[in-house]
Length: 196
Image (cartoon, rainbow, N blue to C red; front, side):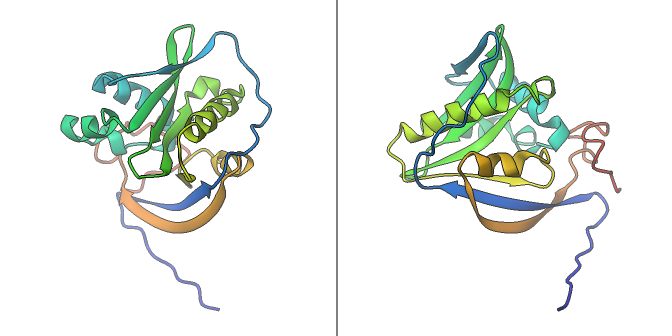
């Protein structure tokens, strides 16, 4: 058996991306409701507000795609009538992001999902996932899907599987390191070394 090795050029990142899906609403897993947790549907999100929350939720996992978009490109997604953006609020502070994309007929993509660093380990992610499942399957869909990668939280993939998703595809993605081009700070995601 041969081993294929692909060198990753300096200034680039390589991630293994796993796509997962479900075809029926699963039983919701037991959850904990924290004090003052509230899910807020954000209609026509302000672009600055969205980028701030996106950055705070994703900076340790190198979320950068929406930070590099022009205002027009970002607005065309998050202001689309078939895209729903939600915030997990705690005492009126936005501490979690949920984006559901229904633009493909009969399908919902869990486009972005996560909580800020302060909420990791508090079961806020489980609570938010249960809301995502309820909202997605309240629409007439046949498929709910998501993708995650090896830059994400190490528990992300098993979390999605425990939530009822099944992996169906895997690929390798090579992208420019957003800490090299300035989209993110060089101090973000210190567990992933910068090679420049």
